[in-house]
Image (cartoon, rainbow, N blue to C red; front, side, top):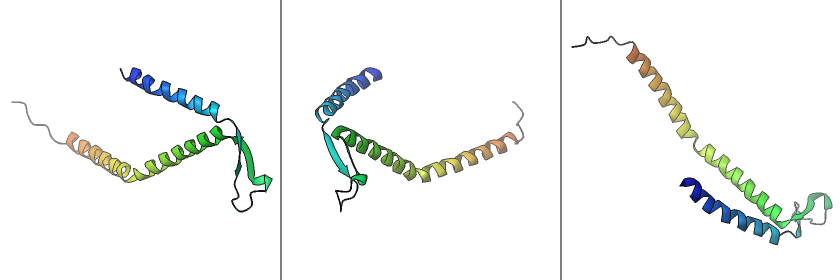
Length: 101
């Protein structure tokens, strides 16, 4: 059931992205120097969809890194609880057994 829902979502999304790429394939000029746009070393031409997909991919990577860094306190707490759990298991293992009744 999950795979059907996944494909029902991903197939139209892929078709829309493919259509977007076909429609926006004209070259645009991207200048990395906002003060002097006539320096050819700091500008390049690429199709618009390539630049937009690259910006989207960079945003996803930066967002994932920020999300991972934001979870650092939870991971630290999880490691501490895991160490405490192991310590308690070792203490329980060394306790004397009660006789069966």
